[in-house]
Amino acid sequence: MDNPTIMIIAILISTFGPGAAIAILIFLNPEKIQQWGAIIGYTLSRFGGVFKVLNKKAIQLDLQGNINDFVKKLSKYTPALEAQKVKVEYIDQNATRKSILADGTVILRLRKEDPQDLNFVYGAYLYVSTSLLFRVKRYISQSQRDAIDLYVTTRLIEKEKPSVVDYFLEEYLHPKLKDTKSDRAINYDRLSIIDQGGLFYPVYLEELHFLGRKVFGNRQDDRMITEVKELIEFLIKVSQRVVGKDDTDLNFRRDYCKSAIMIVGKKLKLLYHDKMPYVSYIREVLFVNQTETIYILGPWENKKIIDDICIQVADIYYRLRFRKIKMRLNYEDGTNQLVDSYAVVLNQIGSSIYQPA
Image (cartoon, rainbow, N blue to C red; front, top):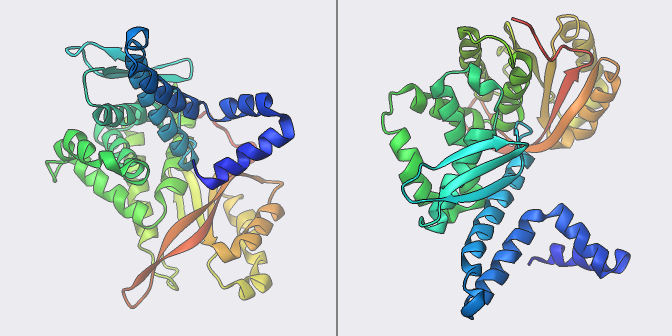
């Protein structure tokens, strides 16, 4: 247990008492309780006898706790999750692994005989494929869906549980991307380019999330598949944009997508004298053209200025989300650099969520 966690527990105990502190911790961190329960179950099962039956339950709690911990971390990256809770059920060895979305929970049906790390990989991928962008996935192509699921699971496993990367490569990534010329592999590679530029989570997944809210319940047609393909191409151009060259169109207007990217990249001293043009552009161009979503991006040092811009347009756009990100800046000499950046998502007040076909 790390020092910050110990400090938080100490503060809770001193403020609310041991009983209330435990209740708060359970409420805020149910996945940790599952993991602790697994440790207790493993320990008691070693004594045999009546405690032997606890081993199976401990394995289940351990897996469930680890996947829920994974899900909790994933939710920090994207709001586009249909469920943020996982329940694990074990099935016979010959049964098919699958996942079900029910009452805000993803139920994972996994084989109890499989190794724990392998089950974690199956569980993580099944959760992402079931819960992430649930609404929009029925309107895009299978290769687009597969690329999103594979890419998100890859990045999260690399970051949060690198010990199971080999399992994921063997079971999912290599088999599904074996044909490098397939649409799935091509889409996966394009998502990687967008992510390298820092636009995957704060823009691409957000935009697909909004799309899902707009079209859910409509009839399926090819327009969504085309728009998602064009969105990827647009974000690749933006992510490869060279600093100082303003020839890249940062507006993306289609049948469903009506969004724009605003890059507040000037040096802080200059911005203090030049922030009004950003406000004017939002009011006189983006708002007039009914741009529903604006993604404001800029160096972290410009955070206060960007926040001030948001305040000055708060009567027409509300700030939905903001976060610190890493963006890659490309320079004319061919070099590039990852820099701490600030991303804000603005939504037009009163914009329609549902668009009839």
